[in-house]
Every structure is written in structure tokens, then in C-alpha cells.
Image (cartoon, rainbow, N blue to C red; front, side, top):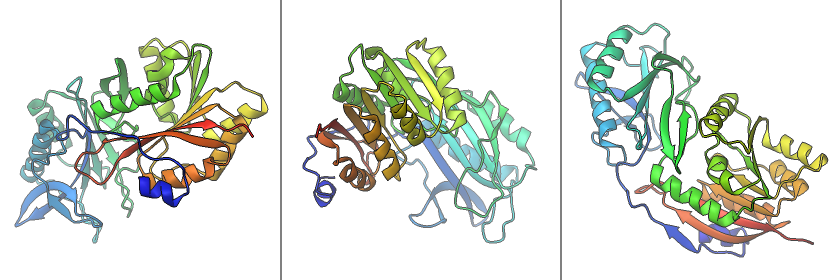
Length: 352
């Protein structure tokens, strides 16, 4: 991270790295593919840079109960003679299985990704899974019939339960679906949000804008110290979940808006809307030049940038430097035993 900051001419260095106390069995979201070897079905992760499934039995990054579920699922596929999807011939049915696990509630959500609407033995599969794993709260069925490397093409529909899973995070209750963004490591996410709170030091008369807000986890964890939090997110389903979570936690000083964050900021600047601080946690691709220019129009005093990709972060910080100075950078070990890291940055506006 320091090397990238230097490369992009950013006068700042990482001050602290927050290591994970739980560095194994932490991943609360797992996607597996399926393959056959000598006629036996097995499940696992893809080999790097390929679509070759490796039998990753008892993977140390995944919760033990999730590993047990994966092995049992492969056994059911074998015994029920469910056809595996073949990318080359584009035949077969089962493509992937996505599992979400909640550490605090011990709930599981399973999404079956199929190449076809017709899925033989589906009812028997659901019955067997829920009997063996009573902690499964929901099972969804998603159809992906495209010739694509994208795992999930649609949000799916519930075939067991209501399609959601619940978790307790930062003393708040959150409900989310298979497709909603949720940080991969529960405990490290709490460390990250505590840092965001510490960085921004919101006051009771200040307004926080939470861009790329998803289901509202960051904004809600900071709301108790602000006058108001405005969450902006372009994904309709995420905003629906955010509003539901807002009611669930009795948050009266929050507002969620389904809109493009860049457009929202431009409108807010034109109407002289008060925004004292801004937080962004964009996807791996980072943010855009237009987004940063909209921040310049809005002129919040403080900006907190959370990133899962140091390369795109350093690129974006270089653009932010026109009007903002980097004050503090820390790392959170969100993905132990991988090459990835979560970075949190505090910037303050420089008055020309």
C-alpha cells in the first residue's frame, strides 16, 4: 500500500495494521463449483485464472459447518444423479452453489444456481438439506443460462424460507439476501466500522452522506453520533433491505435514497444541502472521476474512503488531492491468508 501511495505522489503512509484475531474459518460467503473425477462428484473453488474446479475439502477460510454443507451437497448431487453443467457443451443443470453464513445467529442461506428452469429432484434436495442442516433459513433458486463467467445472473427466488438471512453487527440487527453486499469477515468488519467512527468523529449537529451504501451497514453504525445520515445506493433491492433494517433498528435520523451517488451529489450541491462528512466504500473497481468532481462540488469537510483494492484506491486518492489532503491511512486484515487487504483513509478538505 505504501509503495502504491508513493507511486501516485500521495504524501502519506500507513500508520497501523489491524490483524485478525480469527484468521481461519472466517468467510461468511462462499461460492463453489462442481466437477467429477472417476465418476465421483466433488465441490470446490476454481484454480486461479481458470474454470477448473479443485476439490477444496475442509477449506480453512470457510466455517466448519459450511464445509460440512458443501460436502453433503456434493454427496446429494451424486446420489440424486443431478447433472453438472458443462461450459464447453453447454449441457447439464447445476452450475454453482452460493452459501452465506451468519456467525452471530448461526443461520445459513443457500442459493442454487442452475442453467435450466427445470431442475429434477429439487424438492428432495431441499428436504434433505434442511433436515441435515436445520440452521438453513433460506434456499434460493437462481437461473443462469448465459455463456458467462458471472456466477449469479439474477437475484433468485426462494424455494424454502423467505430468501433472507440475519446477522448482528456493531450491536445492530441486519437482514440481507444472497445478492446484497456484506463484508466477508464479521469481526474485522466491526473493527473497520469502529475505525470509520474514530476517523470521522461526527458531531450531533452534523450530516453524513453514505455513498454506495448497500444495505446501510456503515451509515447505521455511525448514525448514533450524527444529526442525520443519508444513504445513497443505485441498487433497488439493497435500498429495500436498507429501509427494512432502518425500521428494525428504530433509526429515526436516517434517510435512504435509490439513486446514482454522483447525480445525487450534483443535485445536493445545486440545492446547497448540508453535508459535513462523506463516506464511500465502492466496489473493487474504485470510484470515478465524475464522482470525485461531485464531491468537490458538495464540499464536505471530511471524506472517509474504504477500499478493498489498494491499486484503485491510490489512483482515486491522486485525483482527490486537488481539494483534499490525506490525514490518516490504516489497514484492516479483512481477508487473512490471502493477498488482499482492506484500507481505510481519512481526508480533510483543503481551503484554497
